[in-house]
Length: 400
Image (cartoon, rainbow, N blue to C red):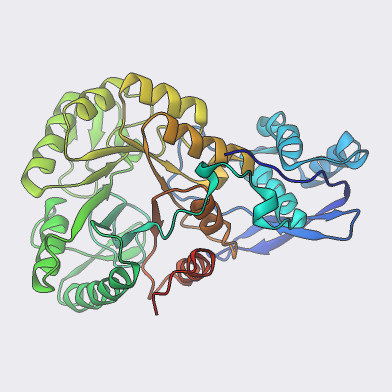
């Protein structure tokens, strides 16, 4: 898939501060082209972030704008690839989130019809509605929607079929059943947030709870369970600590045994970030020992095409999560998608928990031919509804 935008000359770039979904201020950049087109871009952000992501660059936005104003970007026309190459060379200086926002603003300003923006390669063709990975329970230290006491960040359900309308009906029923049943459980506090707890402080109780929900709804064999462990957050000296449940610490070998047993006992279909970013032997051992559960790298790769290729070659994973602000530019997102396909890795696109209004994830998912997309609980996460609506528009799939 090759980006094929027409060259556009930048007239001006500006920045304002706007609010994200956590009511925190973030940068929104505006790019105006000499043809009069205007585009905006702001970064979504994660609460659980990898070692490869920005914390803070310390660079003032005025310095970013000055460097752009005095660059060739304002002197001669640029394609999206040209603009993104400029940002890629300054990623460490500008910060990944700022680079993504600028790249997205240029992308939106270009406003080129799809059939001209994208090459005619079959790889770039619209491939239909992706399977939605439904976020249904949230744990860890940042659990807000359907929050449960768990060391792991997310529990998701992944359909084994392609009927989007049926998935959305199921999702509504699942959410209602979960809400009614969670209301009957006691609550405790994690990171100043109230969360539901089960009979014992054991992560497997969350799995059992979901299995019972699916069983009551007659959906037991129609969905795979997906766990986002975000194990980098569990890493301590000497291993991985389950600090929110039983306080146990496991070495890499012991954690590998734990995952293998959990997968076998509960028939888990997808396991995301089961180890920290640099615990390569743990990744390799678990992935090589699995034939039915797909081991997925999120923080391990942070949407970097080079790391995805290296990880696939070394047998660390079966798939990867692709998050636009991790990649840093539109072009880098596309390269991450292409690399995942070329290396035989299952690709799953994902937004971040701290959202903006942008629905570009849906566009990139569809035009990139990615078969899976994470989506939040629709009753409480309207940003997921917005992306879902955009998927409907883009694919033309009648699901109403």
